[in-house]
Image (cartoon, rainbow, N blue to C red):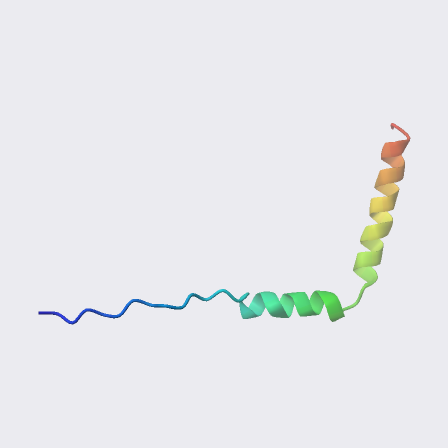
Length: 52
């Protein structure tokens, strides 16, 4: 008779390593792109507010 393997009792629930490094880079990296995005968003909001 074949040996029954024991079921796995743990599940990997942590974020994968590449996601952790990406988050760290986003938080500690240069913020100029974020500031540029904020300016573009403010511009788009202002244009939409004029109804044009």
